[in-house]
Length: 251
Image (cartoon, rainbow, N blue to C red; front, side, top):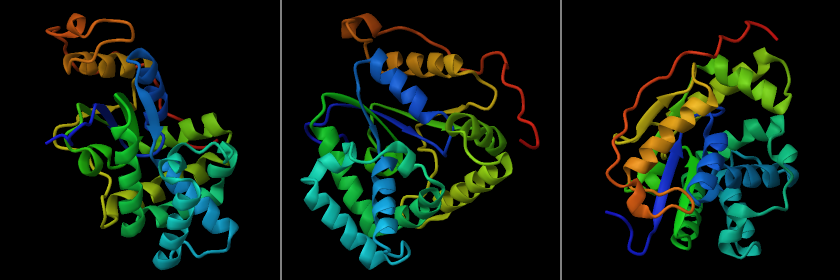
């Protein structure tokens, strides 16, 4: 059951570089939704742990750090803090450390509470992550699970972040997938009622068409459009023509 007083929540889950951020930002504009990247909080904690020489495998110390950061940031603002440069949070060492931080049950409990508090203060929002539609908001208005082949996701990350070699990025993507999917607390997996979209051979425009249709089917109106205008529309789902070619074996 939806939490009392909770507004519209669009949950977008999936592995790294599946297209979550790009699509969430587009949906936030189209449907006037507040946007939240839940994984940023775990990256902030991992970054701070590295800066302070706190072993990220030490659950007690990392949980204590999490509590300190939440207190210092006056609770929910840690989720949207702009104190941290994106380049720092996406550094290679943070990419490795964040997996260890994210699997600590006590840390996930605290971040989950923050996300629920934040969402409760928004009339409508879209949140991306790994367990938004399964653990945090199992009764979300609409749920998506985006995925793609690891090779394609690695190539996207190389292009987006001008990262290291394709082979190294692919290894990191596969390692993160294994860590996310095998952790005991809130593992990465699709919610049973999530709309699953394989973005491997779809353009971003095609993915957005699918997601926009699904949102309208759930009664969401576009920005500036009366809610009644989107009700009752019939849409079909499926893959659009294939346009994305496979990435090269090396880069």
